[in-house]
Amino acid sequence: MKCITVLYPAKDNDAFSFDFYLKRHVPLIQDILGKSLHKIEVRKGDHSMDGSAPTYIAVISIWIADWEAYEKAMAVRAKELIDEVPLFTKVMPIIQIDEVTYPGT
Image (cartoon, rainbow, N blue to C red; front, side):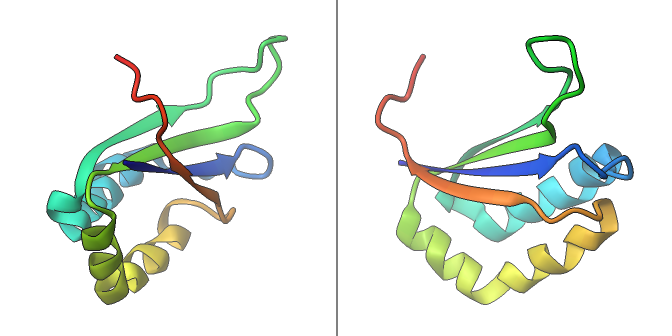
């Protein structure tokens, strides 16, 4: 299984719209990925360990159960996701793809 982590920096990102992200963007991700999606998790940055502002305003984890199906879906519809980014943030995210080596409980 793979996990795509999308990190939205908090710096200069006061306009990030969780409402838009949760009500429109997450359902779009689910629609595009279909059965290749295992689960999606959206987290809102609260604060750093020292109590200061969080480094990231949002962290999204997208677990992919079927990588080949994911690649096929994204080849057709990735532009839809990219086109929505300016509608909920002015800061481009950092994206990392990981292989899950211990799935946890």
